Length: 245
Image 1 (cartoon, rainbow, N blue to C red):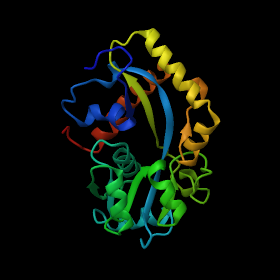
Image 2 (image 1 turned 60 degrees about the horizontal axis):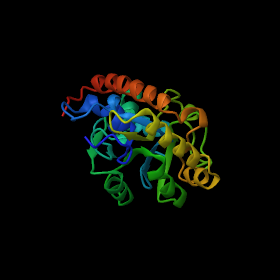
Image 3 (image 1 turned 45 degrees about the horizontal axis):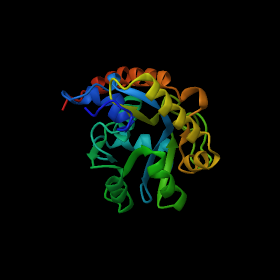
Image 4 (image 1 turned 90 degrees about the vertical axis):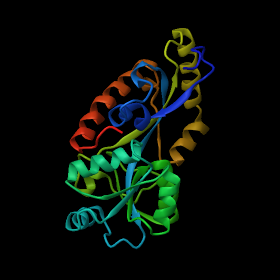
């Protein structure tokens, strides 16, 4: 509801601007009506476990969860968050049933994983990469087509035996509905220039994320991404039997 003058912006994610419309009966906004400025980065998903978890690879993890339905705990950043969607997608593809534990953000969920209070997490690269690198948790699978330079020992979903488990979140900048096109275009150009900076790109990659390619930084591309993900995740959420909150 801010004035559409280009001075008030928000950063949205796949969870808040892609799937939320299927999870909440009344959000007060329609993400498809906001003015996308552009995507900042893609954020691949991981499945990670506490250090002492008995499964040592992704296949063993799937078998263990299937053998113990509803008992393996899976922490996530809250209902409707991108990590929650990753968990739903994994369960949908592999026919799994977790003991799902919602937290108020990825930070508290990770703290409990480190302390051994939950068994596993589905989360995105910026949350899990430092912990995988530090050896405080174990990464079982990376949900993208190629391994990440930030976590070279973590196999991809295809290598781990579930090639359909491709899950990449995103973060993007949005302006209020009705922001004039010249203003949106100016903001988009500034974002693109920032992402072309070598130091910025290097830092994004160090976090295990994927800087947005130049051809995909446009408002039009981001608008298509939002529309696609609203539809895609509505289907997954309905299939999971999750009622609107």
